[in-house]
Image (tube, rainbow, N blue to C red; front, top):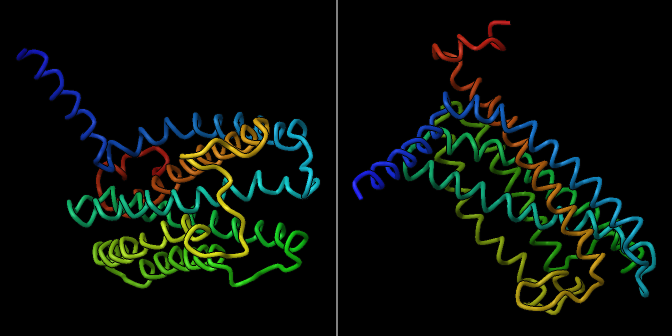
Amino acid sequence: MSNTHNLSSSRIMNWFRFSSPSTFYPLAGKMIPWFWALTIIFGVAGLWVSFFVAPVDAVQGQGYRIIFVHVPVSWMSMFIYLVMAAWAGLGLIFNTRLSAMMAQALAPIGAWMAFLSLWTGAFWGKPMWGAWWVWDARLTSELILLFLYLGFIALQASIDNARRADKAGAILALVGVINVPIIYFSVKWWNTLHQGASVSLTKAPAMAQTMLWGMLLMALSLWMYSIAVGLMRVRAIILEREAHTDWVKQLNEVKH
């Protein structure tokens, strides 16, 4: 019993070891190629299913295929915000440096996903609704999400002291979390122009299986892409913030 307890404690200690920037940096470097490989595998499979296997929509024709990009980037824009806010909150509560760095690394990726969501949505909206943009509840709340990302990035960049910037950014990120359920439930709470959720956890999918698989594979690809880019960005942030430390000065990539 004692040995089991000691083994569990040892494993927990090993995981906590990676909460330090100096130990997480090399681990992230090893994980990045794997996530890029998964990005390509899921991306190629997702594009093939989405554009060559999934049937033509009976109502929207070929134009509906933009949802294979639009829906996954919209999911990712909300999910990344929740993860960013969680990391920012952990940094605020426990004063851990790596948590704040992770939040800072994720913000531009989330902003890119929110922008792609709005951009692809406009390309879908023009032929389907006859307008590039309407002040619909779903579109407006997604635009607010983009502004929250940009506000987080701008706020952190405007404060010279990194620790103060992390705390200010964390408060903004946590306050902005309230917008995520508003985006998700906006099509239920308000009778708006935007169609309902494409996939629901409580209902069977109202689309062909091949359409659903194409969407899920694209979402997996974007998930892997976000992790790969997030790890690359956090390594760059670690190097920038820890440049004064001995372990960074000993790195081969810094020496060269």
